[in-house]
Length: 487
Image 1: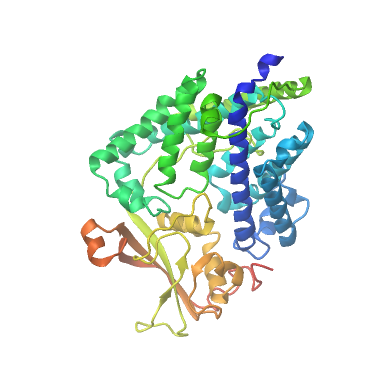
Image 2: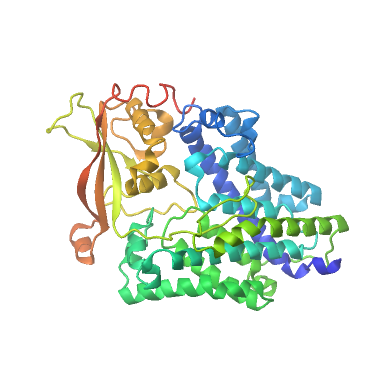
């Protein structure tokens, strides 16, 4: 069955496996640094409470067998170490069974975190990492021939990712059809980056060119992935370029980075040979059993693709949906609708025990989301700031914060160390404030003239008070107890 092993894709596999190892590393570091405060035993949405209502069948996870904050941290460290082993190439020296075991453990650990992560892990790039990570188990180390069927499954994943995103746009907001969405998107996206102000200030004509190029890539060029080389490589190269464009214009965690890595896996190996100084091994082969496993995997993915394909072709297409609890084959898509106005939650604190009209309030500063109008939007992607992202959603609708925002405010009133580590700065740290409140502001990027005059990146206007001043007595019992998030 040599026809099922194609040594010509060796370089594509190498680039992809190194890339996904890096993404896994980032994902486990994010979980380690933010997980205890968000989902720990005394976190904003505690895992033990979630597990009481989420059976194994719906949310398979190692944490059904045992949970403690220490065990969670240990799992994160195992993921970090194994990701580093794969990133530096040590995994390629393992026998096939060792390779498969390493990547399977990575996948199982991250699946376990995602399936108990609740609202904090409800993003499309989580399922994208899990689906791509599961396929990586069956790619094999560098000393065996790349399994052609599995490499094609990477193409199939990239196709569904791009085509699904294109369809959801055309079926969604009218501005995608009249080519005006990007006149708003750079300003209203969840977390702008250092170049977003400049992209927003492009001319309306260039915004239409951006939008049209997106449609052509996701709805036309994408079909080139299903064709032989070099056509597939050309299509993938266009996607790599567009993902690079998205990387420099916004902060979308590892969505763009992982999509770019998927695109690199499809490039013609000869092109990669020309730019990467890596010695390719001689003629490679694969054991029969490994080839049979790749056939079984292809049949499994084909069967599990029925739901995602039906969803993708449905006029009621849903974005970022999993059709099985193991998240093996999923539906994708983003920004079916684009907000025209940016609103931000500003959390403030005071040391005045009896807040009144003359009270002085000081702001909490978040790491990534807009706050101080003079602070340039920072670059965080591919790192993911989960709290910052959820604050953007709450500004769209307070319902997004119903399960955790009262607890978050209670933690601020306690000056909980783990919660404060999620923030860039906090008033009165390490002492607790007397009261906190939440205001809703309307933000927009400054004009070129305003930028020259004030050196500010943003202009903001107060719209209303979202949460009236709260003291520790007001939230007593709401935050789930007085325990520390990092305990």
